[in-house]
Length: 537
Image (tube, one colour):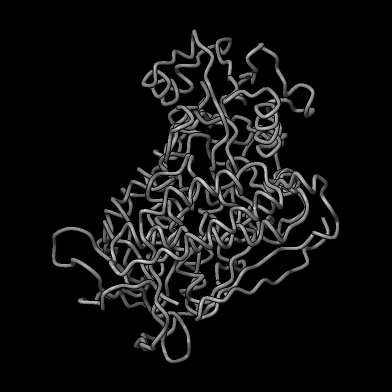
C-alpha cells in the first residue's frame, strides 16, 4: 500500500538518505560522513523545526562521581516496567558517556558548576544526578545548534528542506533503495521526486499530532513510522505513548502543540497541588512529584476526574533562582499571563513521546533490508513500557553511531527501483481534528475496552472519507490515521496496565503480558499482530 501521489518528476541521489533533522538524524548524517559516504539529509520544514530543539530537560548519562552505567541501566529497567530489551539498554548506558563526549567535541556547550565541572541534575525515575543541561532549560536548542553547525560545514551533506517523505522505493530483491518525497515551494526541486541511495535512515521523530493536545511540534505526524508500515516493516510497543504530566494548560479547546513545563522543574523541588492546595502526589508514590512520568500523569488524570477539575497546579514560588534556571519556561508562562514567581501554574497531561515505533535491532536495522530507523521513530527496546526521563536524546546519539558503522561495513551497490501496481490510499484532510479528538478521548491517558472500541469505530468511519487530491495535509492526515489504527489495535490487545499504557478495566500488571506486541501491514493494507517474549528482568 502506498500514498496516492503524482509520479516522481525529478531524481536525486547520495550514498545514504537520512530523513529527519533532530538529534538522531543530524548525528547519523555526521557519523556517516566519518566513513566518507555522501548524505542527502531530508527534512520536513526547516532543519531546526523538529522536536529536538524543544527538549528542555537534558541528556542522561553516567558521567557524575559515583555514578555508573550499571546504575543508569537499573533506573532505565525500572521505568520500562519489564519490557525493555536488556541488551539494547546495556548498549545505551555503556556507550552513552562516550556519545555525549563526542557531542561536546562537536561544539555542544552544557551548563557548568562554579568549579568548571559539568552541572548534573536529577529528573523523575533517576536515583542519581546524571542529567546534563544547557541554557538552564534549553538543552535541545543547544544540541540542535551544535549539530546543525557541523552539518552546514560539510559540503558532502546536501540538505533538502521543506520536503515531506512519502513512501519507500524498493529494488527487485525487495530491499529499500530510496524514497519518494514532495518538496514544497520554489527551486530546482519542486513537487514530487525520487531520491536514490544505498541505504535509507528514518529519523522523523514522533507522532504526537495523532492526539488533540501534545508537546510535539506541528511537523510530528509520524511520517517515518507510517512509511515503514507501508513498506512492510514491523512496528512495536506503539501502545506505549508517554503523556507528559505537566504541560501548560491553555483551556479545554486548545489544539496542537502546548508549552511544556519540564520535569526538571519538579527535579528542582516544584510541588503539584490541587485547587485546595493539597500535595496529592505525597500519598501516591514514595518519590511524590519525582515519580516516573506515567505514575504522575495517571495520578493527575485520576485526581482531575475525581474532583471535576480541568487541570491541577504546579507551585514553583519557593524555588530560588527559578528565572535563571528555567528562562524559557519563565518566558513562556509570562507570554500566557502567568508569573511563576507569584502565581500557581495550571498544568495537565498531554501526549509527549512514543516509546514504540519501527522495530529495529541493535544496529538500527528494520525488518526490511536497506531501511534503518533511529530516535523516536524507532523501537530499539531501550524504553520498554515507559521512557526514563532524558534517555531520548541519548538514544539518538548512541544508536545513530551504530547505524553509521553498520551502513559503512555493509554498504550495498546502488540499485534501480521497480514499480509495481499497489493499492493507493489517501484521506480527506478535514477529518484530522475528529481523529485527534477521538484518540485523546478514547486512547489517551486512561483507557478501557469501551473507550478503545469507540475510538476503533470512529476510525472505521473516518477511514471511509477518502480523497483524490494529493497534498501535504492529506498525506499527513493519512499517516496519522494509519498510526492511530496501530496504536488502538495494540492498546486493545494488551489487557493489563503497564508503564504508560493504562487500562482502567485491567488495572494490574500481569506476568502473562511480559511480551512485546508488533503490528505489520501487508501490501493490501491488511493487519497482522505478532508477539515476542521479553527476557525476564
